[in-house]
Amino acid sequence: MDSKILLAIETSSNICSVAIIKRYKILSVIENNAQKQHVEIIPSYVEQAMDQSKISIDNLDAIALSIGPGSFTGLRIGLGFSKGMNLGIKLSKCLLISINKKSENVIYFRLLRHRR
Image 1 (tube, one colour):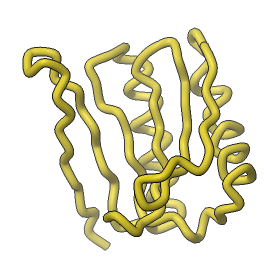
Image 2 (image 1 turned 120 degrees about the vertical axis):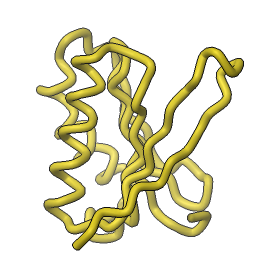
Image 3 (image 1 turned 180 degrees about the horizontal axis):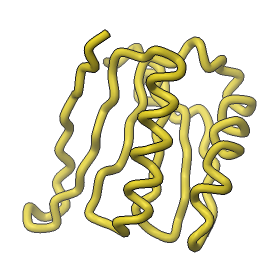
Image 4 (image 1 turned 90 degrees about the vertical axis):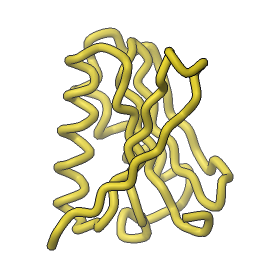
């Protein structure tokens, strides 16, 4: 996935952030303390990040999403938004990122393939 373009979404805490990543390089980041406003602002954050990075939604290869630990509601918002976007633009991959506190904050990746 090193040459792929990822949309990264973080909604597990009060901070709501969206980033566009290509070849391990962050092209744009939009983030803010969005206490209980994630559902209202995440679509505009995605749009702003896409505009800043000059990447079209059609060029996305996958969505990277934080799946916890964190706020249950925040995680559901991120997951719902990502799944809807994934199905809407017909991506075949969604990358889930989890930080396991018991393992000294090691990041685990799990790649899901959606059946078409």
